[in-house]
Length: 252
Image (tube, rainbow, N blue to C red; front, side, top):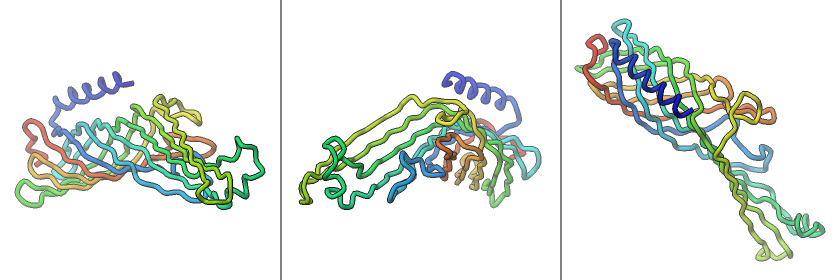
């Protein structure tokens, strides 16, 4: 998979370097999350979510076809996923476990689940550009996006608690972690799709050879499904781009 992605990047660079195209290196940061929440046990008393912070790196190219409109595409490494913490009801722990065997007295207190999934994103955007002043321009774009699975992992940490007597200080805590660095891929439930599709939009400012964009993406179909739940990625972030070579006069 990694070799195929490298070939894709090289092909992209060769093809667009020969056209009347503006090419730019792009880097940025984004917040990522999933819908629904990516949880080990969906039905719990309470949960807290924190958006995952990831990077975006790659190359974009803009091909003008009129004074104001261009086609913008690219090859972008995008880190996505989610962070979730679930809290379980341990009220009256001693009373509810006092008659149980010793190996069943421990009950989960909380579980933290981290999903890291990295993709090569290929946006296919229609971009509108409006000159503001001098070499500055306002840009806005929207279009579909192809996401190719690159790699990923999941990590879970569960805190369990047991109580041998009614006194609160008798509580005992235990920790268990689990990590999977070889996520299964495929189209069936329980596996991560190699390819799925999304929608992305951006807005920004260009300053001669530099541009700054704010972007939002959302999956149109699931990247993973399990037990009837269909998970989709969402991201929101900012990126900085630097144009390479001599820019085409038609896109100024």
